[in-house]
Length: 258
Image 1 (cartoon, rainbow, N blue to C red):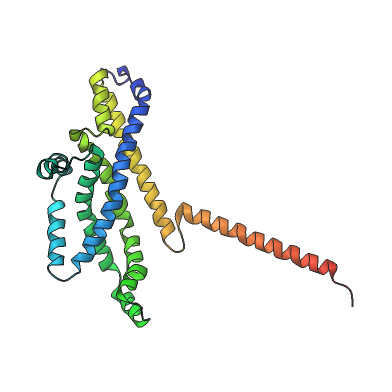
Image 2 (image 1 turned 180 degrees about the horizontal axis):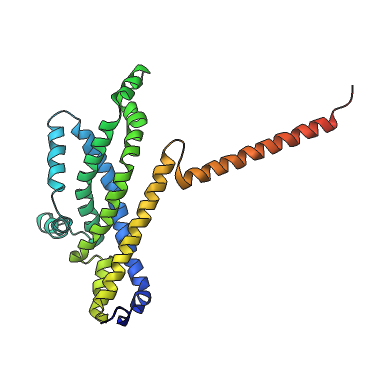
């Protein structure tokens, strides 16, 4: 069958269902991202704590970095329900599964980022009379976040893609929607191509957003955000100069001769 013999209009006809599937995937990934970043930061701090806390963090990190997303979501959705009698929705199970997995990855990202901050900055904080928690929150953490941002963006793209495995529990994300459409249209090549394009576009968009955040985070801001901020600053400066000149002319006009 030739390429143009496929019914490519199916992509446009079912655009709303595919977009809704993407939004579901992004919603799960965004909630899991927030939880994973907080959990990963906590684990990274525990890695530097005395034993047995550092051992606990190390064991958790090594276990969940080796668990596939598919196994994790099945364990959460079916296993926890059997063991504890807690019944999660597919959305909740997806968020919990991703959070358990990616907290381990973020723990390593933050651990290496915190280790990259020069110890002299901590010593400078002590010299200024700052306490250790204040140094961590005001000095070390902001620098570590700046170092970790590119990796956080990459991890988020991976989280969005991993939601495709949650079809096993019935989450209506992109792949599940595609499967349902294929079952009624019998056009797998067209619809799975659309799903692949959606994931690629989402990955480009996420990468762009994190690059903008990264550019705005540095001082002075760089990239598109930096140019916009500098343009705004120049406008404000010109307005101040114009007002100053206008005020000077007004003063000269009302000044009486000696």
